[in-house]
Length: 201
Image 1: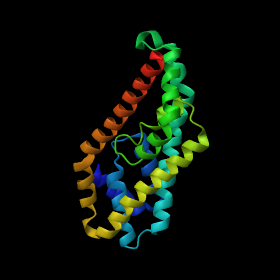
Image 2: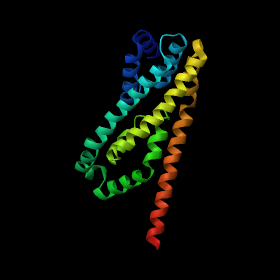
Image 3: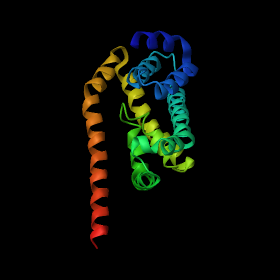
Image 4: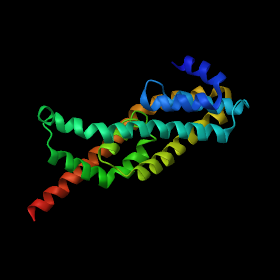
């Protein structure tokens, strides 16, 4: 996959970078940790402009996230309600989940854009909870811009050694995902504790 991305991006320019990053959001096997450092290397070689690369990558990230957000908003909840008995879900449970995401969703969306494996998934619950589109787009733009700038900048700085960025992120993936899951678990536990306190009053 890495060699294919390298071949395509090296000859395709900013339009291909946009398309690859958009696809990465929808099809996670195309990894941003390969695409973005390689784009940074191409910047160092003078084949891309750094501002153009950042804009194209961030636009691609946001476009892909908006597609998944729309799937969650217009397809997710109706499907879950339709098959709620099989999944042991009720409207009340979904309402509680929505309320929890309303409270913590902005942090999850923003930080999730910088965690491999979570970047794509987080857009769907944001849509299902009907997070305001403007809020979702702004948080996605901000989180994506930071992630993209870091990886493009690292690839630019390392030049021919841009693959070190990919290797470092792949090594850290398990810890990043575990950290993200731990944060979610903390949020769930705190929310459950608050509910129990309210009921005991």
